[in-house]
Each structure stands twice: as C-alpha cells, then as structure tokens.
Length: 180
Image 1 (cartoon, one colour):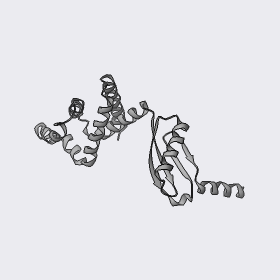
Image 2: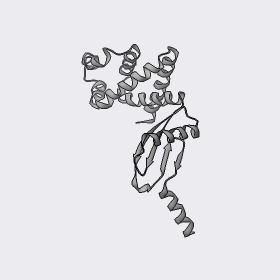
Image 3: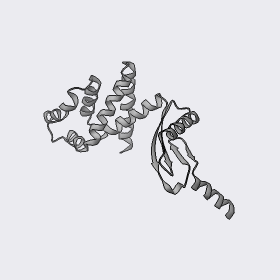
C-alpha cells in the first residue's frame, strides 16, 4: 500500500462518511460496507479481475451483478466510483478507513487483550467497562488472545495506550531491581 493510495483511501472514506451522515443513512451504509468488505476479503481474485483492463466492462458488470442486485443505491454508487477511478485494488483499505472514521465518530475503541488463560464473558465485560472509562470510549471492542507465558494478568493494547498488568512483566521488573 503506497502513501498515495492510503491518502486516497482516507479521502474516499471521509467523503462517504459525510454523504451517509448527510442523508441519515450512516448506520445502514456502515452495515452494507461491512458486508461488502466480507465479499471482497473472501474473494481477492475478484478484485484483480475487476481491476484488469483486459476484462470487458460487460464482464465486470456480470461479476458485480450478484453483489449489486439487492444493494442500496449508496453501495451501487460506491462500486461505480471505485470502478470509474480504478480503485478496486484499494477497496478493502477504503472500507477499513471508513470503519476507522465511523468508529472515531462513535467513540468506539478497538483493543487487543492478551491474557494467560481464556477470559470468560463476565471477565471480558468487566474489563471492557473499565477500559471504556479509562479511555473515554462509548464502546470497546476487544480482540482476545491467550499467551500462557504471561503467567497471569492481562495486557491491553489499543492504538493510543498499552496497559501491562501481566505477572511476567512484574517478575521482570523485580529481576531488574535486583540486578541494579
């Protein structure tokens, strides 16, 4: 991903956000884009074919027909703009950028939680509530991973912050103190 395509992706995302906000279709547009993302993420070859200048416009329309036949006008227009400006190689990045703009507007924070053992729903919910307060988020979405080398406790990493409450880190700090 070049810097130029990243900048273009951000511009498309912001423009789409403004259009959907202006027409009060933000929630449905967001849901539609997430569904569209699933289609293209599951079929990366489709992106290559839609970007291939050797493939006729008619063939490209046929490939898109199952996607567009029940799609909203917003999605149809989005796909037309992506095709017209040959942005299919960036379609996933455009949708990802849109998701970032949407989540920032809604004060949704994504974070990775690494724990020594699997967290149950109650633990995950309590941790999410505490982290929401800490970062001032309306909602936190956790991606959880298990790493037994932590021994105990959790590590939470978001874009802006890392909270390391693992036993392994505490042990390392004690070792450091003892060695100095």
